[in-house]
Length: 190
Length: 349
Image (tube, rainbow over all chains, first blue to last red; front, side):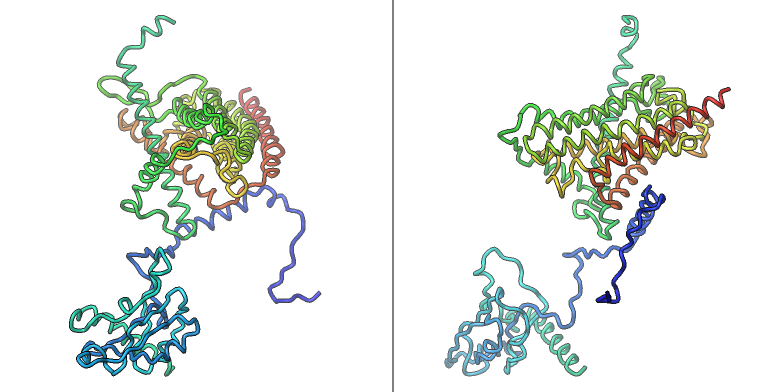
């Protein structure tokens, strides 16, 4: 019969020879192998202190972008929700009133914007669909939690920190976004 | 007899009491750190780091483990025999500790103008005593396994009993060959005979190999850990145990390993004899310290060997275990005994 793969091996069914039957040579061989592993470099990463670097295309939790003046980019067009294959995004649009120009960049904004992190498959299609440079995926992943409700992330979780009120946190998050844009761009060019 | 009792002065009693306390505490601490070493060695051999969170390098891990075991809930199953259920781990622990009485830990020490022997009791049948106590050790496991009223525990207990009976035979016969060479049953005398560097392993290599294999079986260590085979018997004889009673069982295994290593070093590897050092040149105290250190190094090596083997080879199947014991080791030990006897007889003529 022809072998299905090139890796097929004939099983050796000959009775054990004397050296094999006394086990000891085989045990000593095994012990030399374990001893070699004893001195090998360990693969463990001490997690909270050391972190494994993410791959450049890693897709984690979402973030909703603001511009330099702290105005939200999102216009609640709904393209991300349409693009989402897992139907994890829900939003409610609202019209910007006069006096709210410092809050929202365009005349329409998302009054409610929720992503269900249990439904989300982190495919990044929302990021690709967004015409307003508003939604990005970051390199953090959803932390563990005790109930399902807390995995539905609203605007309080998603919107990037305010550039004037919390410039440090904003710069950090913005840096991550820019880095990500850079990465995606080089990838597309390659 | 009366004179003998009167001859024991108070100082001797205090001396022995202190020494016993030291030995028991040392073996407990060493057993504690053997559990730590076991986990570290297991980790390293599997390319992991092992426990490293409690204290530097995880050195406080055994304390944390012990504390956890103390604070765990004590569960005694309703259908268990309460008295025997408690007796089991106590027996296991007591017999594990008892063996240390006859092991010579070092030569004489001069302290406060007294010459103190680093041995609790130098009895002339030392090795027989070791055997007696070790055979008692299985009662702890058997009683615990039976009293749990659980089929898995019972199976574990039965396995332990039959395994230890099978391997004790080969162990005893291997030892007879050694006794024919040394001509004494006292452990101290045996060690003294080896002080010139001619360790008994040179005369009895095959005997040592058989003895070593049997020690693995007696200590219920892999590849002979069938009494607690996790993947077939839940936890084996200690399935129903919790809290410190479980701790006692696990701990007695490590104390047993420690004592077994000490006995093996004394019998075959010169005990407290440091190789390439002439102890007679040194002062008594220095020689005793060097000797105790040498013994400790040998013990640590054997403990490492126990772990090394455990994390290398898988468990025997039950029929393989019995085949090896009855058809392999016992005939081999008998042949070894006969040949040794013939050679001893020939050389003495």
